[in-house]
Length: 221
Image 1: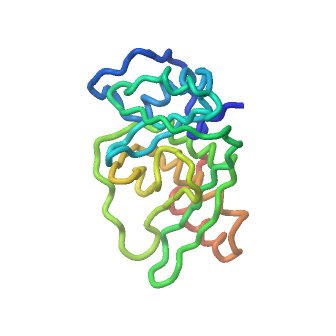
Image 2 (image 1 turned 90 degrees about the vertical axis):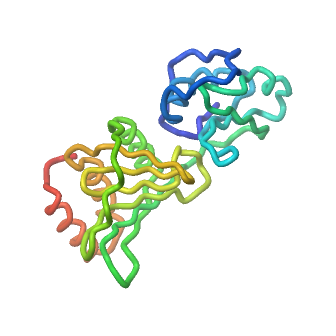
């Protein structure tokens, strides 16, 4: 079974196999990969796709089966202005893409952390997909008390970002030196991530999460 390394980006556009020239970047790289993922994975010998860095720039990674020697020749050099980097690999096993969530609330001692299950990480990416991009700087860190939520990937899976930060209705994703900012209307993503920790941390932290949820508002995410 072929598996895209960005687990929830389901593309439906056709792949222009001959499009290897230099094109202006029409969209952000996540949108471009979303547009072409299904077509890429439909090519013989392609076993996975993802987002990485090539020469300090975001690029689209395509993984091809080492047993299929012709697979690499059928791929373009670029997709919509982004370099397409082909890596030869063996068949990819199913990934359990896990992420760790940190409640950024303490000063002088470690913050509470918990892991997302594969299903929760999948839902996080689906929710992130629905957020509108915005042109804004990340909010300045608050002082004492609750400052927001940080989510980091804890294994080498290409989910499009290394770290995600949520505070004050703004979501910032970071991948190397690249950042993307989204609007979290009603702080829905922030409140949902808080809920994922309720069954995984100590009772005093659950109480703390409840206090933060009350502060954010208790409407259903």
